[in-house]
Amino acid sequence: MSIAQRESISASVTATKMRLLDVSGRLFAESGFDSVSLRLITENAEANLAAVNYHFGSKEELIAAVVEKLVGPVNQRRLALLRQINLDVSGACQSIVEAFIDPVIEAASRGDEEDQRFCKLMSRCIASRDERITSLVLRQFPEVLAKFVDALRLVCPWISSDVAHMRIMFMAGAMAHSLFHYDKLVIISEGRCEISSLDGLRDELVQFLSAGMSAGTSK
Amino acid sequence: MSIAQRESISASVTATKMRLLDVSGRLFAESGFDSVSLRLITENAEANLAAVNYHFGSKEELIAAVVEKLVGPVNQRRLALLRQINLDVSGACQSIVEAFIDPVIEAASRGDEEDQRFCKLMSRCIASRDERITSLVLRQFPEVLAKFVDALRLVCPWISSDVAHMRIMFMAGAMAHSLFHYDKLVIISEGRCEISSLDGLRDELVQFLSAGMSAGTSK
DNA sequence: GTCTATACCACGATAGAC
DNA sequence: GTCTATCGTGGTATAGAC
Image 1 (cartoon, rainbow over the protein chains, first blue to last red):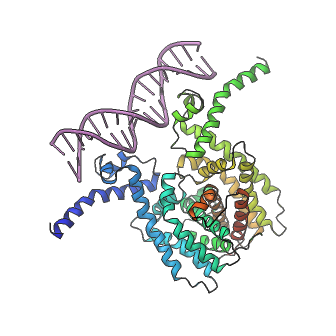
Image 2 (cartoon, each protein chain N blue to C red):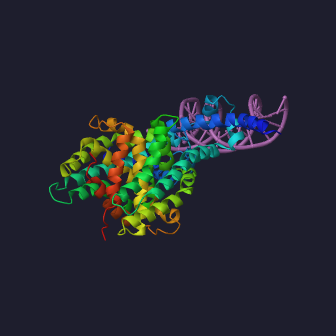
Image 3 (cartoon, each protein chain N blue to C red):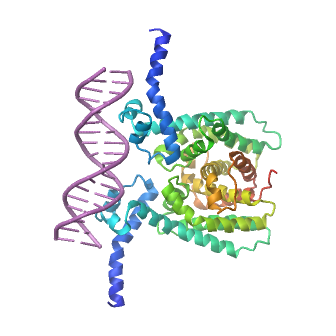
C-alpha cells in the first residue's frame, strides 16, 4: 500500500472520528458530559448512533479523548513556561502563578472556538466531581504538581511541602471556579460588577494568587 | 383535630420523606447527583420507587431539597459571623475570610455524619457545573456576595467593586476545590504531602485567602 | 393522604447484517 | 465502516390498593 493510499484511508477513517470529537467537545462545553446524549452527538455530527461506540469504544472513552486533548497540551505548556523562569529574581512567585494560569488563557484566546466555550469545558474538567473524569485530569497532574511545588519552595523557602501542595490546589480551584462563573458575575452581583473580559479576569487572578502563594505561615 | 394528632400525623407524614432526604444526601455525597439512581435511593430508604416522585415531585426537586438544606444554614451563618466583625481593627480581612470559611468547617465537624462526606457534598454543590444545581446554589448567593463585597471594600478601600467581586469568587473556588480533594493530596502528591486533617486545611485556606484578599491592585 | 405496582420513553451498549 | 435491532437501566407518570 502506498503512503498516499494510507494517508487517504487514514484521512477518511478519521473524518467521522474527528467530527465526533469536535462536536462532542462543543456540546460538552455547553451542557456538561452527563446531560449530552450520544444520540444528540451523533445527530449533530451526522453520524450513526453506533459510531461513537465503534470509534471510541464507549461514551466514557469519548469523554476521555476530549479531556486529554484539552488538558494535555495545557499541562505541557505549564511545564515549559515553568522551566523558563529565573527563580532568583524578585517577582518569581508571580511568574510561577502565570505559568500555571496563562496556558489556559492562551488556549482559550487562540482557540478555534470562542473563549467562553473553552473556559467552560476546561472548568468542567478541573472542577468535575465525577471520579471517571477527575482520574483522567489527575493522571497528568502529579508531575505538574511536583514541579510547581519545588519551584514555589525555592522562591518562598518558608513554605513547608504540605503547605505548598495545598496552595497549588487552592490556585487550581480559584482558577477553575472563576473560569466557569466569570461571565455570570454581572448577574449574580445584580449589576454591581461589570466584568466580562477574560484578560481582566486573568490579571486579577494573578494578582490574588501571587499574594496568597507568597503569604507567611501561621505557625 | 388536636395538636397531638396533628403532630402525630405530621411526624408520620415526614417519616418516609425524611428517610429519603437523609439517604439521598449520603449517596449524593459519595457518588454525585447524576450517578445515583432513584431505584438505589428508594431501596436504601426502604421505600417504593414512586415515593420520591410522590414526596418531592421529581429527582430534580429531591436534589433541590438536599442542596437547600445543606447550603441555606451555611449562608445564614456566614452573614451572622460577618455582622459580628469589627471592621476597624487590623486583621479584619482575615475575619472576613473566616466568616466565609468557618460555617462550612463547623457544619462538617459538628455534623451528624462524618466530616469527609459533608465536605464532598458541599463541594459538589458549589463546584457543580450543572445549571440546575448552580442556579439553586446561586439563588441565595447574591446577598452573601453583596455583604462580603461591602465588608471587604471597607477593610481594603483600594479594591474596586469589580475586583472585590472577583476575589470573593476566587475564595469560593479555592474552598470548594480543596474541600473535595484535600483527602486525595497524599495520593496525588505521591506521598510528598501528608495532610488529612480538615482543621489543618482550614488554617491554610485562611492564611492563603487573607493574603490574596488584601493584595494590592495591578493598576 | 400514603404507598404500591406497573407501564412508558430515552439513554448507553452491543451483536450481527450489510 | 456503517447501520439496524435489541437489551438492560434510567427517570417519570399514573391507576388503584390501603
